[in-house]
Amino acid sequence: MTDIDSLVRQQFRIDTNCSEAEENDKTVMINVAAGLPGSRYFGELDTFFRAIIYHGEMYMSADERILEWCREKYSLYRPEWFCKFENLRTLDAKLHENGYEIQDTHVYFLPDNDAQTYEFDVPFKLRWLDEDDIAVFDEREPFRHALGYIPECPDVTAVAAITDDGEIAAMAGASRDSDIMWQIGIDVKPGYEHRGLAVYLVTLLKDHILELGRVPFYGTSESHSNSMDVAIRSGFIPSFTEVFCRRKP
Image (cartoon, rainbow, N blue to C red):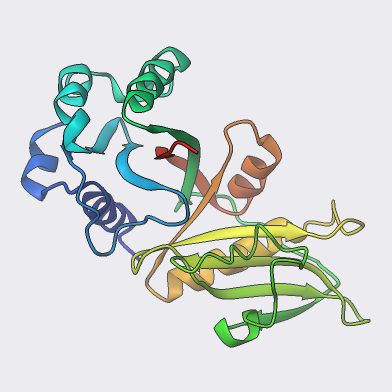
């Protein structure tokens, strides 16, 4: 069994330039942003600021220009309340002073060892795809959640449900966000919803990633209850929240 807690904490330390000693000593860890090799940074996200709230603890990294401000404000802060809008508004104002802004906040799910298992009766064929198979798709295809098309986080594996006519009805894909953590996304084509395809494919892909010794995780917007439902019924549990920043346009 993959030791998920140890692995994700290892990843969060890399993401936020945190030492094991500090992790063992503090509830809120605030360190200078370093952009270490192996960090989960991609696209428009910037290393200027990042916060990860996990099991009542907070891993934070910040540029030297706001590092002391963050330490003064957040060293004694209750991590579970970090995403209150009042706090995010204050943080965003500080970022704006330095040419940055909050890019997004996301809730993420990790595998739940105690999750209920389901029996699936889905009348579709399965097709597993590797990186070469995925390469034939492009951003015009209707799988923008299953496949991210992000160079820094390559799409490495996917599983698709195929109709008897050879049409892809749904696809779950995983991106290698780091050597430790692979992120799952899912798309179901219009006309094939409400058949259990999302839960079926996400469950298969989650189990496959675990067998490879990686940590599968699933992210969505705090307002996307349908997506959260898929995650939970696929054997995930809400586990951490991240706050990202980007340079102002």
